[in-house]
Image (tube, rainbow, N blue to C red; front, side):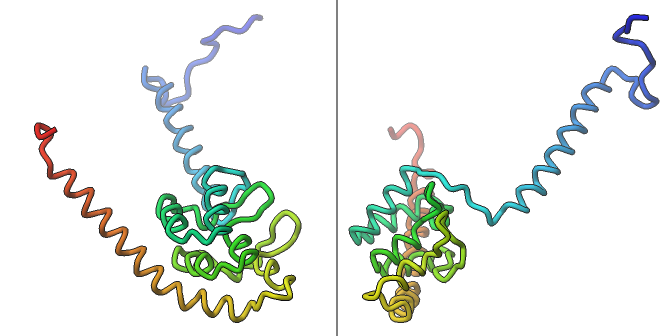
Length: 177
């Protein structure tokens, strides 16, 4: 009794030539639905990974290059919440360098400067300030919150300018190049 590829008739309703395709499609739909649920469950988790974007954000933050930081944050919606392989990100560096502009930008881009999320060493971003006797957490965060309003306004202006530039490019006929 060897097995044959067609040892039994197909289940009722799947006897058409499209049956294998229907099974594959159903499997894909179920897999996609499961992946969607998984993605929603992990939406707040961030992968800790060193990237050129994070390196550039560290450089901009450590050297107080506010324009560079704006460009980097404008370039990637996830930048504000990205974390390096040590679990640190923009908030840690902003507190480490007492960079009120970077803290204000975190707020303007939807981040939480008072998050209790730890790095791999167990330290929260704000602990970079509280463990430094020359850092006044309350003053630093108050100034950052004040700055965030202007940073958010300028962010919106840049987004509108970008949108207008893209619309102008669409209006240029191809034969003008």
